[in-house]
Length: 376
Image 1 (cartoon, rainbow, N blue to C red):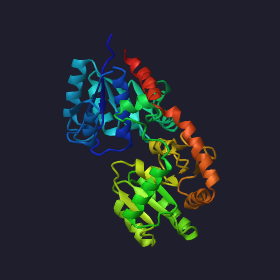
Image 2 (tube, rainbow, N blue to C red; image 1 turned 180 degrees about the vertical axis):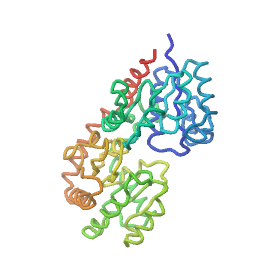
Image 3 (spheres, rainbow, N blue to C red; image 1 turned 180 degrees about the horizontal axis):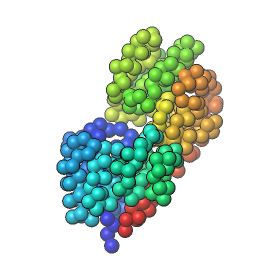
Image 4 (cartoon, helix red, strand yellow; image 1 turned 90 degrees about the vertical axis):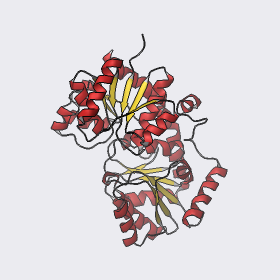
């Protein structure tokens, strides 16, 4: 018997970690002959990339969280094709909940570690047969919101780790791997020319949406401390978001222009990752932090906070250094420690590479298949 198709739902216009993970999952399931359809906004970045991977794409308006028009379309399509709805973000969870009220089977993904209100737990998640959390930390938040434990499955985000998985996502070889010395030198030279800093500067990077819970203000405060003690260092922040103007103004006010550099959106962040001496994640809220897996796979030493699911990805003192959120002095001290102690940085990076295999796409697809089997 043919497995039921999965309707993957995401209403975001841009391409961030959650959308990348949707594509990884849909592509892995497609390779296993599980049909998937990506429902997203017309002309979104997700629609374009899904089409490039040969996935079926359909557009919906997704007008607000409780879009009845989109819900009716989903309900009719799911009923006609005997499909399972899989909402990958909060807005589509609401739309899918309306469709599920009319009988559609529903899976909801939760990627953020924000508290869940009782109202959201009842209206958005109450209709879901299964809830997928990307970390144990999120699962605990869902339980505290009175969602039954038996409904919740922890499925960490993933990335392609071998040749088979790379082919699933349209790549000839694994992009997330340690750079050769020649490539790393080239990437650093390119960045040096583009932004005007010395090629031998210690490079500390951050790749994240410029939104409040990523807490770039703590990163900037830590950068100021680091630069006072290690003035050759340069901080490279990639991403876009509503906090961009505020972050730029803070950099200017703190006298760090040219030393803390906003890179904007990088369509391919891999060269940046592979050029870095250190990756830093300063979040006060983080469901898991899939970029941390990518940094680890590239053998980049990691300094991060203990927010949310981060400790489930980075083991303090083994595959990175972790500090408390909103603690710029501790963050700065950890950065300086790894700038100065390259042997320790190398050991942490090597352990990070070894642990990446547990985040492969085959593992993610295996677990998700058991989730979908709940509805058969």
